[in-house]
Length: 232
Image (cartoon, rainbow, N blue to C red; front, side):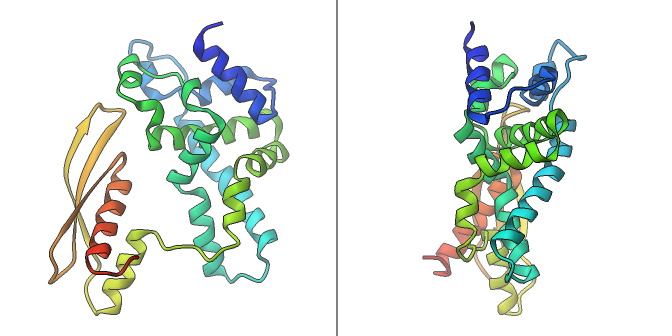
């Protein structure tokens, strides 16, 4: 048994779900980069689209049960934290999805198995694969298992992500919304690193880097807030 096959078997054991249709599992774990030289290979982008919706639904159900007293705004913030790309990537790491991924060889050598965006997309695709294989109850079971720790954190007042916090900081001072400019994109096509500048009228800019454009924007916003003493 090769290393990836062993990783897939270990992943199924952690999931507690044996796929009736194993092509769904294989598709969920296949990144588009693996199509290089094999254009007919099914990859996980369409499953990712569906999985995002399935995850959104089961996460919303879980939050309504956890905090029936929460208002819509509170539920929305907690929901956004649960289904964010970074959270999905963390969940994927906990399940051991990285070693089970099918990637282009070059991207694998460049560390794509630890890339937040690739892992987060694969986690969403896996949610869709479980849903298509065994239905919504199976998807709920996967969510309950994989998001258990994250869901327990949802009982605590959520911390604003840096971009939202910077928007509120600027708005409280009568300033226009922050602007973000992409300065550079480095690395391979499938595992890039972005550098972004955050600008707020009348204040010095700050720069951030990340493995996705949104992550770089958040890093720049975080750096700005820290310089202003708006974060501990």
